[in-house]
Length: 195
Image 1 (tube, rainbow, N blue to C red):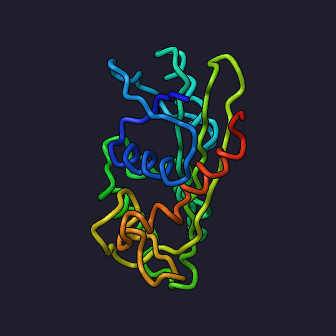
Image 2: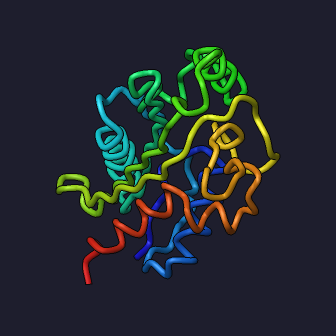
């Protein structure tokens, strides 16, 4: 099944393509010849944002579309930044500013209270006027006191994996993709794909 990946994020495109291939999902990602429409992520949940992105692209291009939305939930911050993770430092923010704001918010919080999780919801819209197929995944961890590792993107450099004693950014890409929230969400979606 040919689908458009509804994201302009090159890191996400590469990661999702690798995960789809590793899982053997019957999805062929196609690159449209026209720019993707801009989508304002103003939904109240990860699912709402993922569906909005996929539906907007499917409507605009006339092709099935796949989108994800990912949030970082930090227990000590009452679940923040949540589904606002990509815009945590404000509209002019970037990954480095988001990480800096997160670490500042957690200054002085002991390691035992820095538990967090990445949550991802993927949405596949086959018919823009029909229901979206959803998959969800999560990975549990904690927020490190300082960034470490040169891989990954976003908050990966401060997302500590207690079972691995490293951050997501310190793992080889294939290992990260094998345990990530995005892989778990895509695997969950795979269970819902039409035969």
